[in-house]
Length: 449
Image (tube, rainbow, N blue to C red; front, side):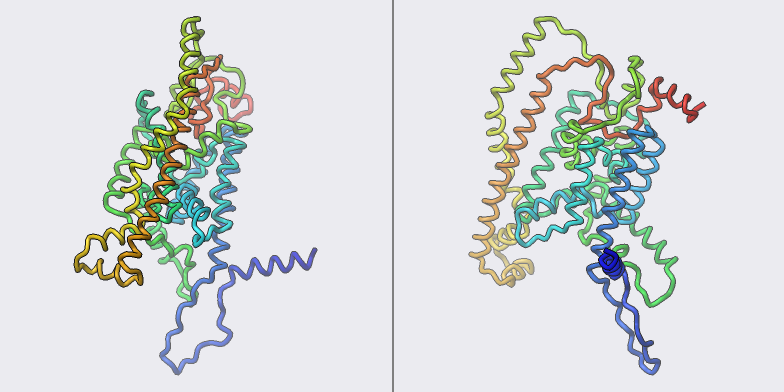
């Protein structure tokens, strides 16, 4: 056992060991030694460091939300997550965008799905099954920056919030279908915060470069490297608009667009434990309802007359009968978007350029790829067929999600107290200090006067 442990420690240390010159370079030559490239094991080690830090942040979020019930602790964790995962790592790696890597890795043979990335995607999902959406509350840099910018929250009416709440599911299924055939990662390209994170990363890099000692050892490549995809001006403007909206609307991206939240939301509903408004009995003061900026607290349900209960049963029967119609209709509607989405695949885009003809440099580059125009058109047709099938599946799943939402509204459950909607709550802890029962508890343990 000791020998095995020693071998493991040596191998782990070798991942981070830099190359060392055994003899100094001769001083009679003007030759400049090339910079040694960072080996792949170092990147592997940094990937596991990201996983370890994410696991620690998720554990801290669960502790501060369920045990300590501390909003201050959750804010400190949010700041740390924003600093490291947002600015130091330039928003990459991120479980939100890594959904596309998983989709591509499961369907494309030439896409390598690394173990750290898979763990990084699944870890917040597993945490949601235990303590709810702790990732959204304190570990996600996207959620952290939205929560910290909120100044004067305004309520989004339910007639608007409920339809907008379906957008994350449509976004998730569309992006997964496109990634499954090798198309663009639209979640990453359309991320409204990516421009801000990369600007912050550049600032961090400038500070580190100014303080880096002048030696032969280069800076770590994981700090220098930034995703190569450029941020378009439209995405930058959209990001500035979202940042402005975040000051008055609580977490608009989390609530109405985040595809990862579409997965975390149903998992949080069946979580083993979840943060609660009050640590004991509810006194129905309604202070928590006013404190929650995302409308995740549900009031007690009134007693319904017999006529209303009969109408509810009729609507339930109607919703049950709508299942096959909704699935079929959404599957057909989704295939209508396949031709437009297909242009986001490089091979389909190249084939369309070739089909248009001309003598542009782009056209000549397409012909120099080694494929004849006919082969390019044939390959594009196959990809468009695959995307059409993928979108049909995605549309059918969206119809199923829509049916589940309608079913949940048809099933009336009696609530006697103000309770948290687990699917909507992001475990931010804003409601804790508004509960008078919570304040009495804090006074007993000496945390407030």
